[in-house]
Length: 328
Image 1: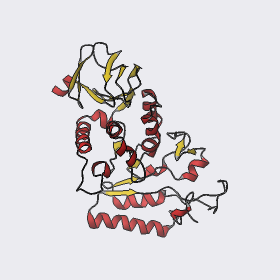
Image 2: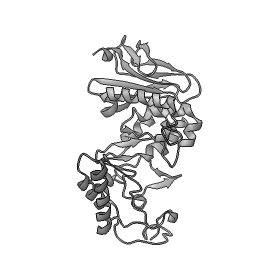
Image 3: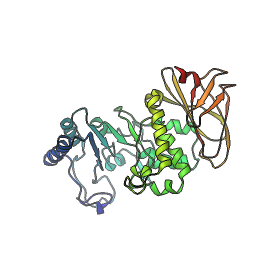
Image 4: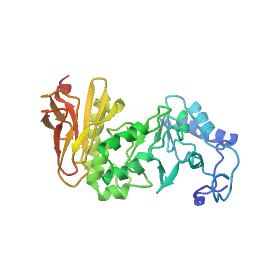
């Protein structure tokens, strides 16, 4: 059968065919053994066919032909220390449609997909997966100011993490996003702050740093920013493993959240507007405490932690920690 819904992709592969499983397992292991690669990114891993439950299905396919057995075999051959990174964590479009998930402008609805509708079953045998739901779909609303800080945090609360595998957070891939952020560098920088400080891990497209696709050209500004952000991320376990909570209380609309791990606390505030803003936050620090902005090297004094006023310039972001945390 030709691929569905895009037949120009060619013929669909039967991922449950024993010969297919054996073939791709051997390829995966060969490159690990021969070249010492640290794992595999698996592209287009969801099923690419339809059945009679889909109206106007051109070539209905009977039975189950998803990728779970294939991934189980590959992961078993690679071993625990080699990563299996999936472009997709659901069995396929067909399974989501049958579960009642709609597709609107290339994005799932509802977004994120709740566990009650569909589980990210391919994550059972993977180590991590892409988050198109965030990078391609949810970020559109963030960039256009259509959500509040509470909405932003709720996305991660609702996201189905049934198998406990992390999601790769990206702004762009080879398929989308590069031209937009190239034309809007101020939004690119803010997006970089988000993907390095939200739950999951940052997935950085190589052309963000090397615009021409090779090492001869380099976007020094983005290189330096990512270098700084990744250094901050490495130093604070709250960013890598902590919970996320909304801290925006009022004032102008900004994205403001707390990352917390045990006693470690980091507050991130991002202004996506082309004007100066003033917002009020409820933050878990004592009155009189001093916050240090890791991005801008500034100090802020807390007069009222339940109604902390903060001003941001157009397209500005802040990453705040209590000053005493730096001295420990």
